Image (cartoon, rainbow, N blue to C red; front, side, top):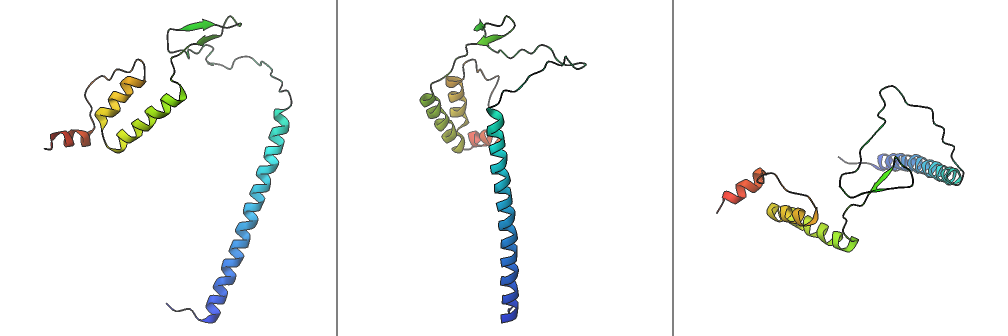
Length: 140
């Protein structure tokens, strides 16, 4: 397909018009986002009134969020806090890097080992059931 001078001129004008429309849309969105951010910052500096309106029908009144056994009281008699095990960020970052490498290398035995070492209470129920892993294990 060949374009003559008139076709290429029309094409470039069309592209220029589309770019201007796109740029004006991006500018409008950017301005709207800036305005929204300013309003949000202003609202965050104000106090927000909280009004208790009661429970809706069938609304859950009690929710158990604590997983571990190491629970402590707070100043409020109905609110408890959990003291869960956690790793320092540098250690966790290193383990995550090792985990990503093991996944990229399809070394699922290593993935399982890292999870056992990192996540307290993690005990896998059975063998690895990844079909690719199973096939590779059978190959010489």
